[in-house]
Length: 139
Image 1 (cartoon, rainbow, N blue to C red):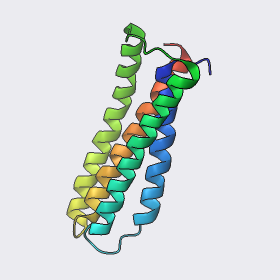
Image 2: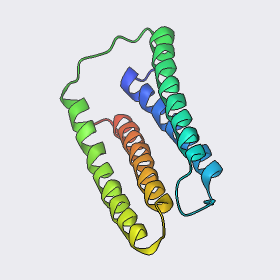
Image 3: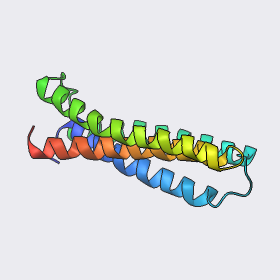
Image 4: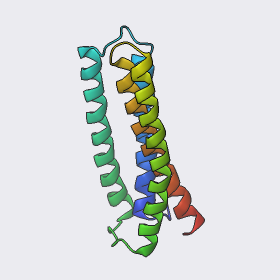
């Protein structure tokens, strides 16, 4: 691992968010009714706790294995973050529009909430993937 801490942590974020929420959506789709159930809320909460635990453990492992020292953010990091967030803004805009459309065309709150969650998950995946891409490209 010759990459820096920030790039390696983006790999942890990308893989954990993608896998945990793919499993979440696999378990809750198709919906059992028009509204979100208490069991789905409990399951979502468990997935968030799992995600936080994976991120904490991932950071600890990265620090322990490669003895990374958290570097200061320089101009290159700021440029990479700006470019990655530019990509995220398009995904979030599309997700919000899709959630509003699902509010008009569906009954209950199940689809609205899950379209919003899916757009947030997609935004995080796009941000991590873009950040990795820009670090690899050499910006």
